[in-house]
Image (cartoon, rainbow, N blue to C red; front, top):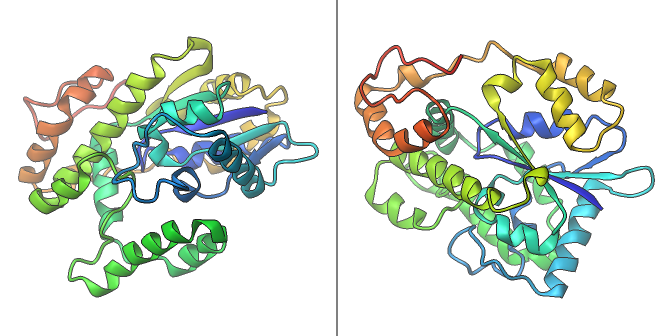
Length: 292
């Protein structure tokens, strides 16, 4: 089975990239983030960085459920999956799909943190949540119960957002108890990026493609390289979908955050920004540049 994982921190553009690749008629796409599939049997584990061990039964169950969700079958030769929590558990993914390819999508952490900060505090989209809940197999009732309780916390707690949104990195519960939410968002991005980069560099280079979001949204050639990497020989549907859906006018809300929050975020994410080649922002808050 030809499997491609789109790896990226939440709010990095992974859904856009998944849907662009999934425009190929040969691609079967898992339509939602399916953290519950990956955590089946590990519901009690405190975070999403699952141990790098999976029994044959677990591997078979995950593979079968992903194929069911994606409607993988006749005429489909490529499976696309993009659950954002996978950033934290690539060695576990390797246990299930040892020949998989990975597209690592990286986006400026300042933009990601600001966007994630809004998502944590947004009211539930009940239509989407109920649609997704219908995909939960009965065997995953324990995760479903956690998921629904997490969403319900928006309604019954004073803070408008979920108790936890996005990848549960190791230590997130302690951080939520001790840190402002904006700092938790910063830690979430930094840990996801650091974990994925560390684990992907250990894989054969021909199985990993790293893509910058800023280049993806303005360079059609990048899409062609992605299609080739994924094994898509007729890229025309992929390129057409990209042209019809790409948005180059998305404005970051980073500069709208209070200066104190921007400084707190930069204290956390500056090492990762520098490692990714973004200009080091430590000496400046306003007028920060993006990569050319």
